[in-house]
Length: 517
Image (cartoon, rainbow, N blue to C red):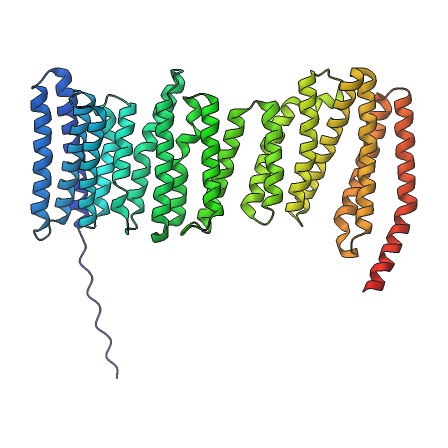
């Protein structure tokens, strides 16, 4: 008889979290007290500046020394981490106050000292193998440093960039994704606030644009260094995307030319990284950064040009991306995104109402419409070709081609012949083009295998139906005189030719395929 196994003893309930919560609260309260000492005491005239700064420095040093002593004692790790984080952050804010409030040292010297303090303090986090210590240093600084500098200033952004750069070596060999998130947030948050303030005040600040570029460079370089050793690659890729957001928003505070150049440089850099086989840049990281590169290019074009130029440029990019990246899913979606953005701008100056009622256009607008129509046709064909087998994409592309062809013929007619005969001639040409495209689809279908004909035959029949509907519902009542006569005769002859020749071509093609088989 087998004796039942004795029950496992229930593990004692851990209450270590209570000490951690109390320690975090102590960090927050103490650092707020340091801020009150440095800022409010200065505003109220309490104590001399030397005493306030000296007291802050002494407190910071005492806290770090106490942390070092406590860490060597049993059970002292939690308290030591909290004390060290408070001391390091207090020392950093003391340097910020000396540089920004009292102007005792020049900004470069203050940034250098702050970098040494931040780097040394975060090195302690690496020595103690504590991501928690790094977070307790960075997170309070993000919230309290703007209080010391009395708002978001360019110098504050410099201090945040310095602490972010100083914390990078701490992460080498460590998979500390939360510390990396805090590093990205440290400069990104004040930069976005500064850009918004610059836009509201109508200020132009190239130094701020430079800080945005440095933050983006720091985010990308940090990710490239840390990606090979991390298991959180998705989070790393997304955090990098968050770190470059200020570059995409830099048009709020600088000239459009500068903003467009920065966005274009970011797009090119990300594309180069994606196309180069770098360690860690694989899978989801490649996909996220490819999409980010496409988004940056979209920002660059829309910021640099107005609608009449941006639309054709975006559609040209869509054609190139669809052809070059036809085997890549992200590239195909990017091409579709460029096409949708360019098509939206195209509709702003070539709306459907211009096809119903004759509208006089200026020569630049007409030329832009003609060029855009041709590019939109090329864009639709390239995207449909890259999405092989997707019937919905083919149907949408066919509708786009029909609209672009009609817009091209009507615009060309109005540009050459005016809003009278030119408008009628354009619609006549559009109807003939519709039926010609249907004939081309039927000829293309006849050259395909029997199992692959359904899509082009369906498209051809849809075009024939659309052409017949336009012929009787619009052309018959709108076109005048010879234009109505010509369009009916030409369309009728093409339909007769299609009806007489398609069956013959199809039979001959099927016989050839059977003989080859």
